[in-house]
Length: 460
Ligand SMILES: Cc1cc2nc3c(=O)[nH]c(=O)nc-3n(C[C@H](O)[C@H](O)[C@H](O)COP(=O)(O)OP(=O)(O)OC[C@H]3O[C@@H](n4cnc5c(N)ncnc54)[C@H](O)[C@@H]3O)c2cc1C
Image (tube, rainbow, N blue to C red; front, side, top):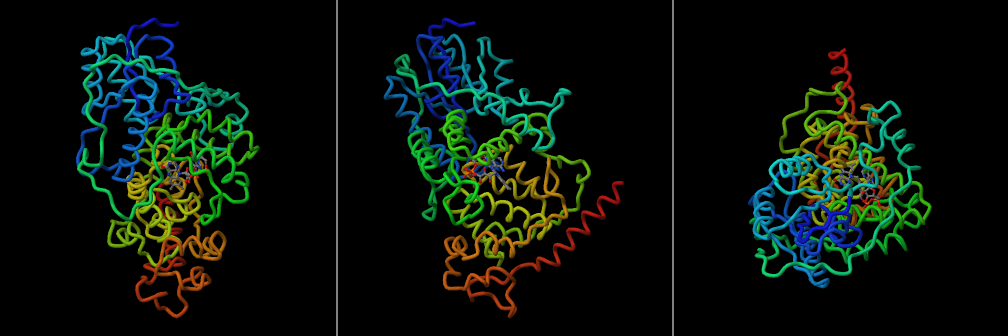
């Protein structure tokens, strides 16, 4: 049914773009006037699931969206506080007829939408936008959800994919609606660090990255995607997370390159979306019940060494320092770093998950949880517990010249890369200002095998 409204709200959340925005396009075609709105959260100082780098990126996305809306004759309205109350107040102030939104994939976003539906006297029009296929669309022939990636991807890959739609020509916004100024880090009492090297946020920057990914970065994806020193992955994850690019457009551009592997990565993203949708307990519990109640160690100064990139394992420290400075970590290194926390330090994957969520610009609850549970061996289709990556041999394989390590750990610039591939033979640190490895990988590997085996025996 096509509606014929005078004035509607479009509530932006994780879809911070004008191009191919499903809810926005629907609203424009069904209403004479549009009130585009973003509701800022009102926590201060710290948050378990986000942090200053992510909020900085969000500020840039909102600034860019605001400019783009103005260039089409509209005005972006910013409010702050409880989203349900703020949206309903705004509807009342402006005599809006309905609210348009794209569905969120996170439990928190879903809960807010459901609260809004209950509280709102006005119709709420919700759209599937963040994924190519909704979790309900890709299910097993017997009607139950997939738990294993390969059969999921075999079903997901051949399904016809929705095509992108265009960009609106104008956004007619009613005049004189009160708005807060665009946010800055000070809005949440956060501070910028001079050491940051963050990608720019916003639709224009994201579109530039898409062009560069398609013309250069992923033209040889299958060969280069595992080399962390090489620009051989798309680096679009933050844009898919904040919606500065539409997944339909990314899929359409990428499918012309004929890299099945790249499309399979997009399928991993939707695999984890559907895991979180059908099994929301993964946010608190191990997906595989066999591994619930594993005896993780209490966090101590080894956690701090891991979080600050001072473990004495060059590949681990390079990964964490890349994350701290850029809000990104290469996928291969994410796996090594995550396995190290869980299998070498025996620390709970939830500690790593939270740390990543605070620092990754692409922090995506579903993929982050999926990646951590995969690495810990507890997740859907996870690495089996006895498959423990050795950080030294992973370095030899994926950073043989030490290029990645030397980029992020300047103390090691003058050290021969061979020395990054095994613990120091002379039992001395590689340089006076770089720590000696905080654990012995082969000892900790044995300990992990014992812990998992013992836990399994106790459960059976
Ligand atoms: C412990 C751990 C935590 C992770 N946390 C996140 C996270 O919070 N957010 C996130 O987007 N990805 C996460 N990943 C997956 C992956 O590391 C990133 O998606 C990837 O590094 C992003 O870089 P890219 O855009 O260059 O990826 P590309 O290699 O170019 O891949 C293209 C796109 O596919 C998706 N993708 C690729 N690999 C995966 C994967 N394994 N799982 C889910 N989606 C994938 C991403 O959207 C990515 O942008 C995590 C992986 C691990 C091991």
